[in-house]
Amino acid sequence: MALDGLLEISQNKGATVTQMTRNEVSDILQILKALEGVAAEAVCDRITSEELVRLDALHKVMVAAYEQRELTTYFEVDQKFHQTISTASGNEALSKNYQTLTRRIQ
Image (cartoon, rainbow, N blue to C red; front, side):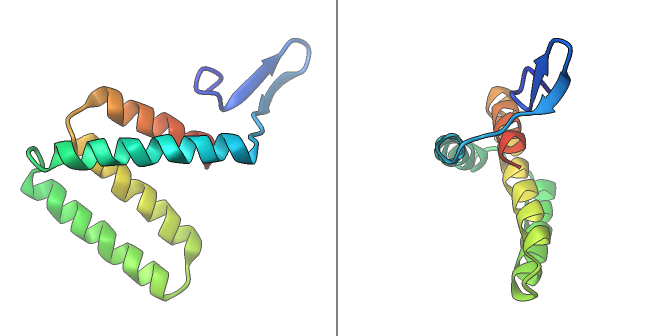
C-alpha cells in the first residue's frame, strides 16, 4: 500500500493514510479519464460476450442506484464498471495502473 501511495510509513510512528490535495485528486482524475479512453478503444476488438453481459448488469445496477439516489452504491458500481472495461482491454499495465489510481482517490 505504501508503494501505491496509499500509506506513509514513518519511523517510530507507523503507517498513516496519505492525505491528498484537491489538485492531486484532479490530476489523478485527468489520468483516469485518459486511461478509460485507451481502454474503451482497445476493448472494442477484444470484449467477450460474458464481459458484455457483466457490463450490462453493472449498468443496470448503476441506473437503479442513480434513480434511488443511492450515491455510494452508484459510485462503487461505476468503479467496477470501468475496471471491467480496463481489464477486458487486455492491457495488463493499463488495468493495474487504473486500479492503483482509483484506490488512491477512494
